Image (cartoon, rainbow, N blue to C red):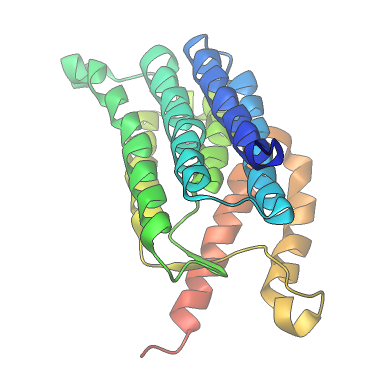
Length: 236
């Protein structure tokens, strides 16, 4: 039995393991560590597919494992971060009363719509060079970055709870939307073929100086650029 065909699946399991630890860190209120393990999971997610292609050992089992791991790391983990923040940290005005205990559960819509996004990706043959809807790793990084980098600012807002609910609904929509979003896969290094990718990367580089908030700003920029390209594209 060849060992090499199990290497990509082992890397996928490392992704899943990272997602599980991210959930535990979220329950402990260590949102920065939860974000770190989501980033680690994203790293494993990047390499499992690449290794499978290099070793020529791609399999339907690997595809299914990858989706299951991704929904934990990029669906359940960010949902748990948001739930714990909204349940244990976020301020609710007195007029919300008992509803304040229910509102945090809306965070798990992130996990639900991430599962829908991943299932859609598996059966949608259009998503080879571009994405249809927001990729789950980008969504997970957005949420973990928002809570870690801007949690104190949102806490001080009178309507912080309303902002969080609005963003949950908005990100859920983008996950399953029909908006085409460019990928960062380079087939060559020419400016003509990769103009949008180069513009995105060049504008994003200074944003890295924002620290924990960098993913929020970069992914917002990615969304806006994708939407502009979609609106400017010729319609059939």
